[in-house]
Amino acid sequence: MPRIARAVLPDGFYHVTARGNGDDMIFATDEDKRALLDLLGTTTTREKWEVAAYCIMDSHYHLVVRTPLANLSQGMHAMNGSYGEMYNHHYDHRGHVFQGRFFSVPFASDSHLLEACRYTVLNPVRAGLVASPSDWQWSSYAASALGRHGLVPVADRMLLSMLDSRGENESRQAYRDFVRAGLGAEKPHFLLPRRTGRQPVVHATPDGPSSRSLSPAELTAEILRLRSEGRTLREIAERLDVSAMTIGRHLKRWSPPGNQ
Image 1 (tube, rainbow, N blue to C red):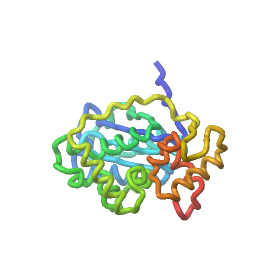
Image 2: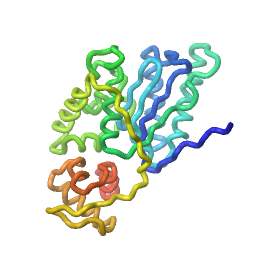
Image 3: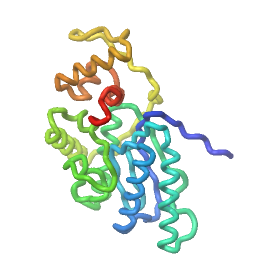
């Protein structure tokens, strides 16, 4: 039976998981994890991905990634294929390294993006490997919580802005508080309605224009106006009844290349 083609979403966000075959510990050593992170960093640059969060465990890894070029499958195939070849050569292993195809879930909800990022970096805590996500060096937590740089460029500006837009220190503190609030929480159950291609519908508000008839340029102008007032992406999303990811794309298209 032929495989069912994956849904391909331009500009889509995904929560991605890839596991070792039979849940084997294919990232058991620091060298294994570092090798995968090196491949992820290369793939992110080559495929123009924007990685919002990641975590490498012993038997699997998690990504929260945006794919502006709708090339998730191509990038994952190349990355997992390269790691599989390296693993087989290093360990004199034969057969499949990964458990079939990777698992991916597309989403367009702001709450899903936030929850997916928190869930990703809390994996080692839930597994009992560390007491705090800051103790696990194989995730994006330090990049978003402390601004540290590593092998993988982390595109967390939108994520941080959704939590607090007063400044970098405030945003990173809000991120640390948000992750800490998730300790002990159950795994989130994403409903995942297929709404990624939904056009924004903006409702009238008492202190703003009736935006149902706004053109894309007018919508961008309204977003910029609210942003200039210091509103967070979440606040603007609630005000205009659109996704913060939609707002982020408007801001990105407007911003000059040097300011992104």
